[in-house]
Image (cartoon, rainbow, N blue to C red; front, side, top):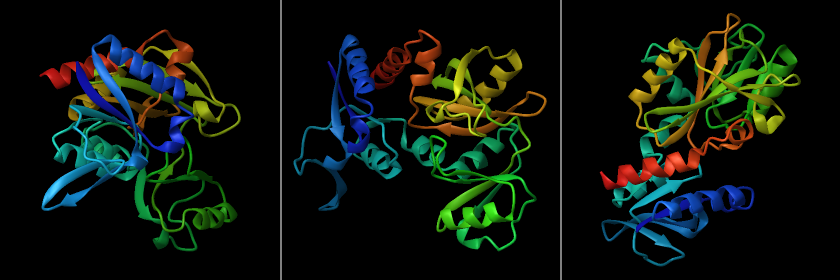
Length: 285
């Protein structure tokens, strides 16, 4: 029997109760004991020149692996320093939870993307550096939050106030509005793609009221996505693409702590079973 921790922040446990139960059931079916651990109960640091990990102020036997389902790259780094295998690993957690870093690395793979500028909100002048319209995103925002469409000077000024103190990216919005593609990935495999669309918002996020349908990737699209997959060492992620006016996929972001509600809504794919299979194979290798 393998032992692992499933780490969630307290505020996310109640919302994801069914998902957590499903995850633990799938793990048990593959002879893995998965223990739910609250991030707030963990204390990490250096004690007597050694990495320490306390759970509720107690030193416990360390798990073989941990699935970190909260945004906390430092936690992932520390767990790995304690000899624990982490999913997703700390490099993925660090890069993919920063939109600027993600674009920086994916650009090296010659993957098309919209014009994207990395900036600090505190450096923004009274006049915008781009012509209207454009999109502003904080580098750490997720789930469609902290994303702003700016179409005029008043909206630009209001946006400056909202994002004050944040690192941001600014992007051209010459794409099909309210539409994007999420590609679910486990390990080195594309599991499924889902086209998300909204008729009421420039963001297509399912949680924001968008609709979704299963999408069949062309050979060219799958090959391009596989280029990203081969470069990174993913556990389970969602890779998001915008669509150009001509329908070409343009890289948008990589979701580290990706959910699968949208995939479950449009298919019978049991992605958690596939993820547990990947985890088990990885920890046994």
